[in-house]
Length: 181
Ligand code: HQG
Image (cartoon, rainbow, N blue to C red):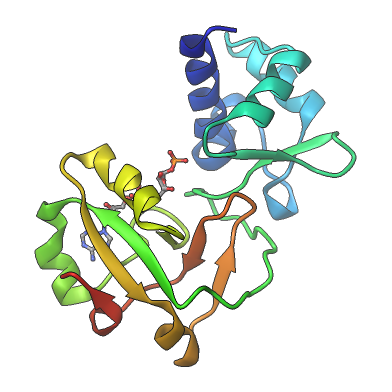
């Protein structure tokens, strides 16, 4: 597969495994899982055929490890980023003391007032390093990097989760835990 096709198929999978499973007749199971056989049939039936080999290639090589198979290889899910109601069954974990969030300068006035909110997603997404945060923020133009006092927020009782692809998830980050505002 060339990279253009890989990106196109990966976006199609993100759309349906995170946001619109119903649009191709899928229902996410507990944990966000879908049967691989059902997924491939649904993709084909909706004009985007994906072979088992192509799917395995996307899961293995995706730049952000967006998707994962279960241990048996018969089920697949998006590792994070959902907007549909889904319980990823992640276990709360102790975050590193400092995490990072890349955003757009235009969002800063609202973030100063309200802190980081989950917006359309299930959680606020935080990056383990500044470079990753910069890439996330760059999706919206010149990125602005905020630091998050994860140790303080965690000590204050917030639950943190680490997705299978190294993204840290939390419900909200109040402004007093943000640096670089
Ligand atoms: C901003 C991508 C106004 C927030 C990325 C962000 C990541 C506020 C945007 C993953 C706000 C939400 C997540 C507030 C937060 N007022 N704006 N109070 N609080 N925001 O896409 O973190 O390619 O939902 O700063 O790489 O940008 O999809 O979150 O700019 O890993 O796999 O509201 O999505 O990964 O945007 O990105 P998003 P995000 P994928």
